[in-house]
Image (cartoon, chains in turn green, yellow):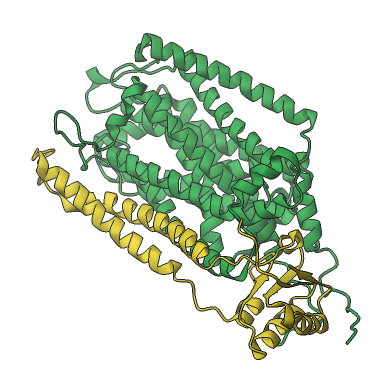
Length: 451
Length: 168
């Protein structure tokens, strides 16, 4: 029986499945000059960071600005910063997946990739901080000559387990999500790229049995990643909260850190998405609506962070504890007042602009705001770590820490390391999920579906 | 990859046409077929009628194993070299919950991946394939001997396939 196909029942603006594949595959084409310029800048900064690290390895931790009592400085600050950045990736990819939030589909891959590379970057800092990098394996429990095991009661060891688990699980989650997309790209690729995609698509052909197991596995990975993401920054916060340093010993730390982590992570997603959609010409898939949703997330988490700042100061006053009160007075009006006020203005006040719809839908305004939030969140960690340590109980034991060129260079190098991986990934694998963007568009039908 | 068995491969532009073809095939007693879709689709899944994947059992068992490993590792290592730290009991269960929790997630996720690989391999389908099925079309491959191919070809062609071809 011959049939005449009826027109496809899709909304006029929605791309077809074929257009989605075509547009995402186009992002993997020959890189533009801008891409190579960015790559060159990133490599130059990475070389500077690498040189500074070698310098520190050669001359020891004395070349960093550590001055007793501040023995956690830029490295631990940056470690916490990058672990925090990683958080929104899992929020967008796993938590919003469980809530069946459709808008996440276009942006979640970028967020997920950011998560993996941010944890990869964060993981460098405990190694750099311990000085003798080649002994970093002492952090893990392994049989040794002294028959001595690690101290499982220490929050620092909890951190080793939490961050290692987070890196492993977020990487697995990213790879699983990538497989069907790589298979779609494989069919359009030629040469060495085709070979690369043939291997990395793991024989995916989208059969009914493959989808049957895949959707179940993806669901459970999302369900496992959700409590994990909440636990990781809680554990990082306990590195501080479990000690008795004034300004650290607070029960609010876990939720405060988790909200701050998601806040900084969403800001970094915005920072990355704005140039990405232009360079790869995916404006059709990453629209103002996506940015507005991200802005709402920024506003929500920003308000939680602002509230946490206020509560910290209130409790310091209300507790009647003179050490707490002195610590918080010192934060606002002591040697590091500039860092504290940078943090408060960038994280507490600037996001209030997001109450205005015009700001939420203005991509340039959001980009600038996201940069301020990134800056503010780095300073938040600096204030918590450095300022608290420099001003503890005994006046004779107080001190001042100033980072050296080695620490600043390694900090800059960490950004270069992160962006290098991101740039390489973006040019070789789909940064917009082909499968999930298709999934929110109904498959073409010849007849109205029965309901 | 191992060579696929001979049969008929059909491509569909409309998902309801493909789902209808699957139901017709099943009604006529064909069970050895493979359906390809670019995205997971409920209508196709219902037509094929698979049970829920056993991957979830792997997740559960992996998580339980991870939790047990977390407590066993920490307690055994604590008592292997009994050292009082910070005035706490040598084997302190509460701090070890953190390690057990992280290993629950780690082992659960690892087991899920192993389960996915194992079951995908065990139920692998070697039917003929076309690159369009990861792009925008639904494919059905029916493995059948030469004498049944004309009937299957006719069935698929009349169910709304945009292309039907014999794969040897």
